Image (cartoon, rainbow, N blue to C red; front, side):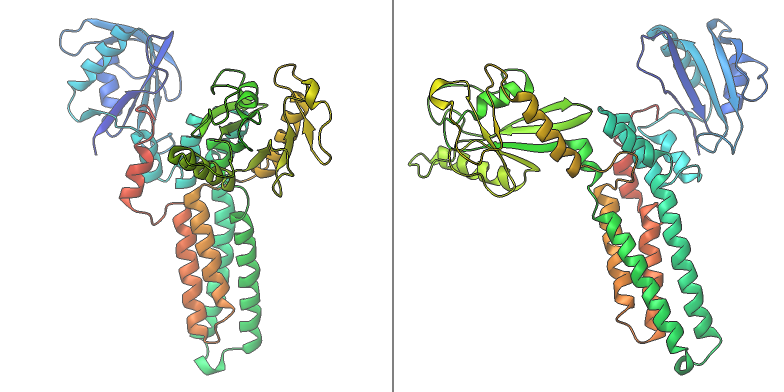
Length: 426
């Protein structure tokens, strides 16, 4: 395996650039540049010299970490350089001349940590989400995964599955198949059912994609009902064209926005005309209905009663002819004067928090949720089996699926796709 190197801090120029070297030749490479190495985990100032001519490349802090107790599980060295582009480029050129060294690929440091057992797949996924986090809720969910929250839950499931498997295997090994204790078998099947329910319950909780992609807030209603004006007020910029001409908005407009630590994707839609001879307008209406169907929060701006579950918003409430809102509305607002806008955001926030994973609780991504659902489904079949051999086989299958959550049996192609999204220094 080659020894890799890359800057793991921000891109230069910067005050400091942390360049990491990981692999079997990390210590010898550092010694070639810096001479005698300092004691492990002790930051020491060293002059780094070009092996070609002995010229000084930089005066940097050097830290040595010996395997296996490192971030990657390999020998690892950190060079804390001055963060100018020329300095970093000069040190990287010097490293490139050394035998066995190669620039790191995206995510390669984290991939080696996974390969060497320093982290599991759920922690690697959490780290990827942490690097991309833009809101406080995203950061906290990612930190929970990166610090092993999902792994610990999966380990508990694995331990219980192993215990159930051991019991049924013992029954099979030390008795004739026809003599397997029926009471013991029913108790075991009941415990498998309880575990299946617990696993399924976690899979049914809101997913981490809601945090990352944003809560989908859709504005819908008939033409000229104030949707685009309200969108612009919610996102605090002119994202949509506003006109008194009905049908100005012909297609959906998606605008991301963050508020109170929550990411939203707010969507303006075409007016829901009862009929139209314009084929483009009909396409816009179809897309509006599709957006409504997939919304997390629907804001209805129509004069008639809102669809079930929607927030009925009475827009342009500052206008004299609209001072008397119809009975049953949830909120009267004015994008022009700000009337009711704080209350609207409060109502949106309450619904958003109900649709999101609870802070500091486990939130699964789509891959993990699929596997959790599969494991629960396999475990539920245990209760339908009367043959202890089939019970034992279903327990083995469930354990194999659970192991895939933490990456113990996943494919190289999936790992390539995951780590390809990481930055070079990770």
